[in-house]
Length: 273
Image (cartoon, rainbow, N blue to C red):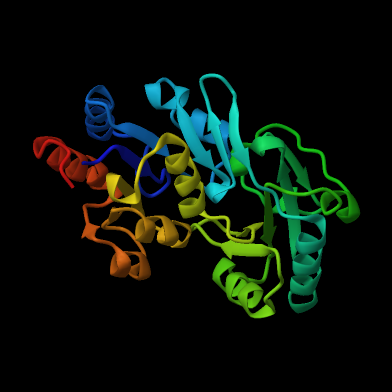
């Protein structure tokens, strides 16, 4: 029986309006009302998850953010867990990458995702609202940015694509880090072993939920481990080929209420996996 639904947000739960569609929200509301826990699971920080899900009940419950590095109850503000990249690991990785790509700059996300420490030059590469940050942003010297552990370290450059950065970072084999991309224009760095699957596994272990009682939805590289871990891993119709390849089910796109299609079918079957 399905007891938990984990859903990515961008490219999965939300549509072109950057909001959950009415059908997706209705399907997940039925799941909640019938005792299934719904956990938004995103590369976004918890506050940014709350913003995109504002005015819905999803913005008041448990979420997993920063690609599995933090879980927060948005209703109470309580942090269930938080895993950070060490100063030594993030410094070695970033400086090694910048030797290969001199235009790189970085930002350290800390304090459960609430604080934002960009290196000088990073803000100029951001589009308005990037990372859920508005207004005037202060920048900091590199030694300050790298001088404290990061919930997530974000790396980007003007002359390099995120996938090129990910491949380079993997070749470097720096201990203590894991890297991923999510369709955004940057590389995302977490502590070693931290990903959406590890975050979801921690939540489920705390709640006494087994992997085969979980259905997980996603579309991008940072969803791979979660989709492989869940009892039912669902790739969106717009998912990357590597995500579709490992999924148990391929549903419609995020523009066609793909999440709702699967949830409605599970509900009709009495939540039988």
